[in-house]
Image 1: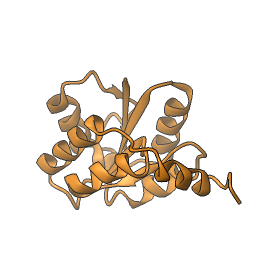
Image 2: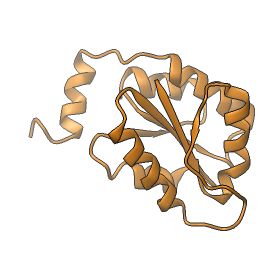
Image 3: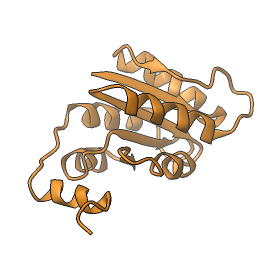
Image 4: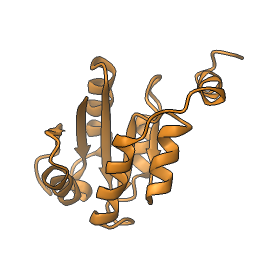
Length: 142
């Protein structure tokens, strides 16, 4: 599985921490510093990469996580879940087949984000009734 990560300036330090501590060969799509930048640019880069790469997942980080989550969820085929604990990370995968986990660098500790990321990457999608709900989200059954 390929794992992409992107953040704005507010998420830069958490991004660097996750890349180092996760030890998974995560592909860094930027930003490359703490200099002020626009989070949608990096959310778009990550979503494009996920959609072009089979068997991939993503990590997005900004100050609260809200901005990058809103941006990412505008893409058909991206299911970005803002998570603040491991239970949310688990259920985002089991029930929603989330392919992007989102963190708010100012609302979750680095250690908690790392724990969420590990659960997110290890958890499988349950399918079944949840697959039907994904079709409803995409508007395929309306």
